Length: 354
Image 1 (spheres, one colour):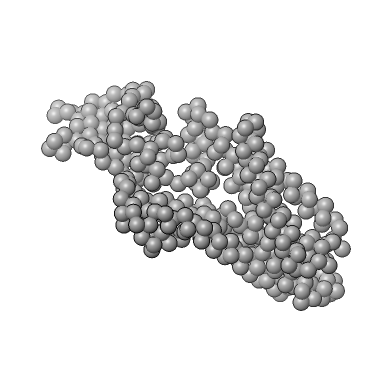
Image 2 (image 1 turned 30 degrees about the vertical axis):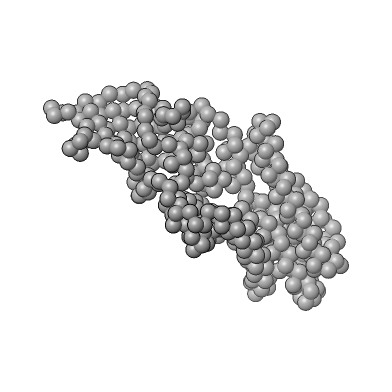
């Protein structure tokens, strides 16, 4: 049975990876065409545009994988059905449920690899891609290091540990130097929000460095004028939807702590958490196409129907994302309902598999 599991797994995984490559190639082409408008600005040439597209592709792997899992499973199982291998497997006493289990295993295994890419690789690469593109276009950019982001504003040096969307910072330190480059003032703030051309700092601690010692004062809030702006920081930020689960969780907690609306990002967090489950549902949904009522239909027709089902799920999923925001639904409803709907459809179809 292990040999059969490996054979089915190898065939299905090849189909999923093939479809994933095709989807990524289409996305890369469309994105590259859009980037051509910037080519010729500053040092941004064709090679820089190609590099930018390649760097952001890992995040698209995470987004497109459920659709690739559905169509790829259809391709893999369809090839087995076309060669009458599925018929031989079932004639040997292997049930449809056992075949489905073999398919589910490989789908979830690949999803595990995609989660690793989405959590640990894609956000950093997208951040790097945005920064390098900004530099090539001649835009200003803050320096990134292991200790966070560093920027200079006159005699001030700013260290920012966390940069969030919409002009919001957390854990920042401002070092103010005099003309002789001696440290005069060190300001630490738990968070900062950009409002009306300046930064509003919260939970501020100021250390005044004087000739006879250091004095410290604690201030609930303070205003900070700086040339540093959200527009400048945008080149080192990752889109909210491209943040890792951990990054989204931290940002949602940050918004809650500052009494700000976190519904949009909470829903994005739940969508990312549900994504592995969604992939499993897409793989499960592909099985009845091959083993169920549609098994008499040609492979090409099954692929077309499968693609339409996958696209329909993507549209419905995005629609619920916006509906949840408009009607202030709980984030879990907008994230889970489309997946549960298609799970119900797949279970109904699976009952008709013989």
